[in-house]
Image 1: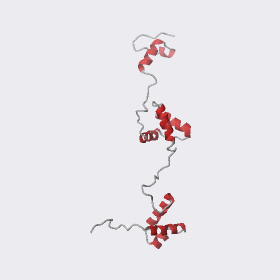
Image 2 (image 1 turned 45 degrees about the horizontal axis):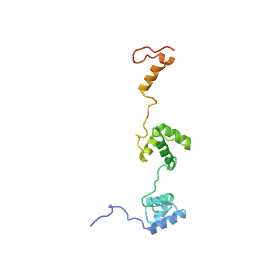
Image 3 (image 1 turned 60 degrees about the vertical axis):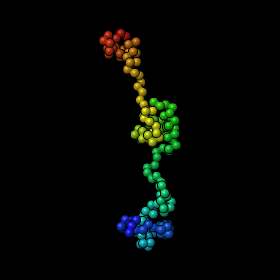
Image 4 (image 1 turned 30 degrees about the vertical axis):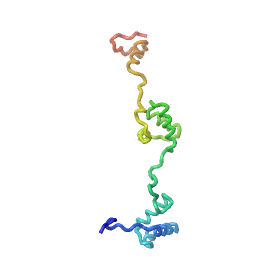
Length: 164
């Protein structure tokens, strides 16, 4: 003897039973009364009611429908963000955050942006941080022409800067 179901699991509801439950729900009967009339559990009636409210039918579609928190911006807007990242590969997450805020008036966290970029297969290496100037370049500029602010700090070579 093979057991295809767990020991105390009831048989699945037939489509006729589901249609009957849906009709009772449409007529305004309460789940407890419907479960007594049809001979099913109260939980089954509530589950069918939830399916009707969510999917429009008493049976959940195969593969399901995503039911989570709705998107703050449409997925089509992420195409604009992809274009932005491709045009300016050195853009930072904060700049993308500012772009989204100005463009659509939505505040997204940098973590959310980072996670979505990962789902879009955009590497964080594209979003590399570039220094405003290299330390050597800054040092060379400070040697060429000093300002009053620079005069307070001696140059690394040990010579005193020119006074302006």
